[in-house]
Image 1 (cartoon, rainbow, N blue to C red):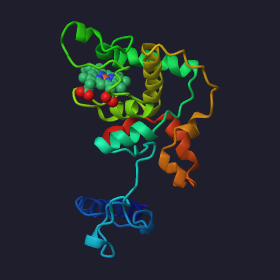
Image 2: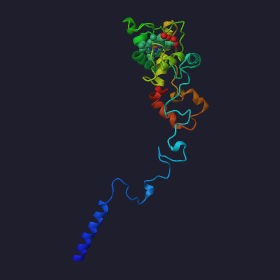
Image 3: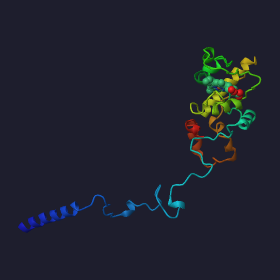
Image 4: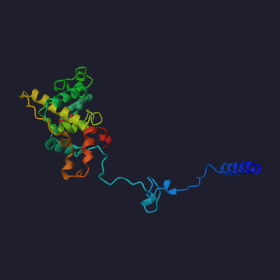
Amino acid sequence: MRSLFHKTIGFCLLGFAVVSCQDKEDPNYQYMPDMYESVGYETYGEYEVFEKGQEAKLPVEGSIPRGWMPYDYENNAQGYEAAKTNLSNPLPYTQDNLAEGKSLYTIYCAVCHGDKGDGKGILVEREKILGIPSYDDAGRAITEGSTYHVMYYGINNMGSYAAQTSIKERWQIDHYVMSLKDKLEGKPERAYEEETDEQTQLLPSRADANIYEDAGDVEDEQATENNQTETQE
Ligand code: HEC
């Protein structure tokens, strides 16, 4: 009995000695290292097989963030002209799109351009800003494409709206701007169109080359988060 008591005490002391000597700075013994050390390369790890020994690589040229869609027209005079002639509104001209466009226009554009699009917004009346054109300005002859382009990049004294609005919202505003232009020019109101499948409508023009062929889920994501990262141009 006594010897068992001593053995127990001795065992405890030994255990204590082993545990207390462990240096907390060093990793402890690993009994099954596979649990800790993965077989694959660690993210941001250093490995000789990679250029400069670095696992992390820049994305392949031409990669784009998920949910972001490239805008193909450059921010210069050629890009403007190209958008003006080639780019058209992918959204159907529905009552909903127009109504949404109107409320966004009232929020973002009307202060300068006026509720009617005649260039007589409240800031103009108060002489806070000058040189706001009317949408029926014949010299400018704006189109769906040029309007989208200036919302995306801005033009002279007008800033970009790429950060505040999503792709869809810009096209909705665009429909409304065009309807104001028609009204200013005394044209008859455009007839509403049928609702169509927006998700395919909003795919970027490069999708024609089928770069998204295998990525079925990309479309779904774009439908929900098509705004966010656009300004990272
Ligand atoms: C701070 C005032 C201001 C706001 C707000 C504003 N704009 Fe403008 N906009 C301007 C000015 C100034 C110009 C003329 C720029 C120039 O060509 O010198 C202009 C020009 C335009 C043109 C004609 C561009 C061309 O092709 O010649 C369009 C179309 C337009 N704006 C649309 C919009 C839309 C749509 C919005 C809202 C999303 C908006 N603007 C918000 C000031 C504003």
